[in-house]
Image (cartoon, rainbow over all chains, first blue to last red; front, side, top):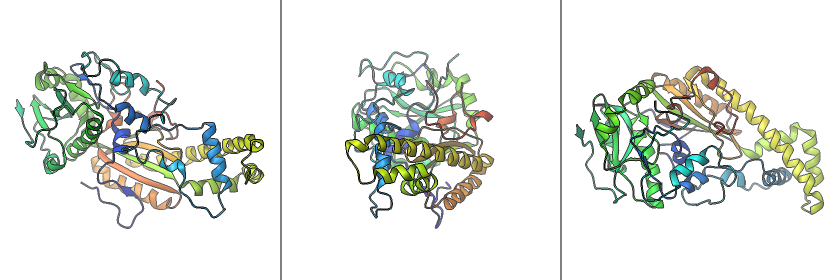
Length: 134
Length: 278
């Protein structure tokens, strides 16, 4: 329904979501009620790490400096910065999210910690951002 | 009480239990979900009272199973939201074999779920991901800020230890300028969309060159206007900012009871990169 690309326009529409889009869209969002066992889904921490970007580190500064330095020099290589999450599906970017797992960290533990194969005991669970059951 | 909406090849054997995708009104005509059946995993619809759950077998307990299920979760709900309001469930929750989706979920939690469903009635989420053309932005910044241009010339072609501090300083200034541009452009984008959206939240940036990751709640009847507004923005910023539009999708970012993100003060500029403090 209504999901046509704008004819001749520059707006990009996705007919079907990519894994990268999906991961950033659905992770840590949505409703949980206490009848549910949240499962420890294998590999979810990799999905999560893939959508994080380390921002404003010295490395970032140096990359910016390099990029600014070669602006006007006739080189037109694709920037490293634009590829960070392009390939989330294939690259298990293990270290990429290091140090930037912020609010998600606690939920990450809920999801992947503990007895891997056993559904966790049902309990009152907060939703994406603190949904509480009465 | 339990009605199978789709009958297809069984999924790989998972851990047992029933994966819950989300909740819709009972007897919703999920035609798009039927239409896309051959591209989606096996799902069924459990009706109980005035609610229904979209459910399916839990996925294989391995990494590939998880990735496949991430796509499945989003795509099943994307198909459902074409025809009905959807309360999306968190990825990775399963009703174990000791419990019943109809009794223990839909009936027992009716009083929590029904208001959520009412809240998303007639509304969908559309997410905008706007990203700079980085070289163009950096040229603007060098042109606009003499100190950056000066430092750039000073360190140009030098990659030695002596220039390290200057290069860090240069990058720091550039980074600050990028952040300023992001604040300004993100706020401008949001201002343009407020008239055609119910609410917006600032999603986390997914790359350094991103202007904003902006989930918006949109009335279905305003969807055409909304899309036209985004198209106009994309045209105006062509060559400088690239716009991608995702959705319609369930209101993943607006379903939280305690903090639905749609009070007036939720309409803040899209620049903060953290959704919220912990």
